[in-house]
Image 1 (cartoon, rainbow, N blue to C red):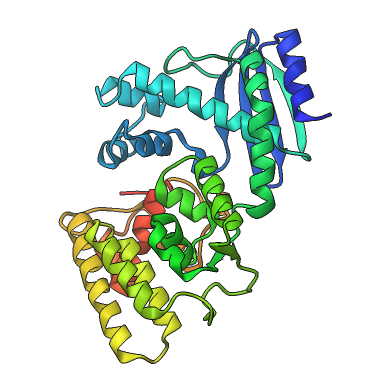
Image 2: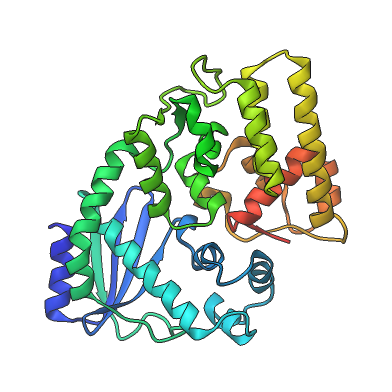
Length: 350
């Protein structure tokens, strides 16, 4: 039974309840009331409401961090942001409607999986009244689902990595820079704080244009002769650092170091980027006493690298950040960058 048929049945019968659709490690849930979708949720951190709000500019990362770390008393994130006056109802409603639409459009492109529908009057209290009609979603969803299928021919899954096929592509901006850094599709989505579609669509466009190609190597750190030169990578790192993204710049600089193994000049420039990142993150995280705590278990997320898994395993909710760093095998800059990534992914709070 195709997903479109499942949704068409819900549109005709108009039952109240929750549709759960699962494919592999990804589970989506849609709450339906009287022929409209009133809530969408996903097991992937790339689709959390907080990330959508930050990515759209509706709230700042600092305000989101405060809302996530304060006691919730059973309140949803949206309600906490509304209660603090950080967000207005219209901005929240728009974000929720976008989240519902994008969830359904991607879901319609699935050709395998399982589903279940559980009748209920209401699964959860809503932050604001939201409802996107199934008729509207199905009318616009067919074309969007086809776009998803076409993009997935070039970007097969969120664990995929790419290589730069055309060195001139480095001038095309942040997306290509993240490709050079060896990030997976999921990691790019998390770093750029956007919904999956915008990243998958852009990567597919770059692939069609011959600017990037799928990386089929076992290790993303293996040098590639046809890739950008170390000097080009360092120039891109300098440009990114001037735009204020020092962590991203360090990733590009390390890619240059990998492409020029044994070059002391390149290594020296990488150390300069490391010092800048260490200074920035130390000011952000070490100027006052903090205790990292795990918000979500590492095994719930399948996009962690070795350093992230290691640091997650050391966090016990008792060690303060400075003591934790001193007790790890990671260098200070590596520990702080890894901590920032875990916090960005919503796995760790301070």
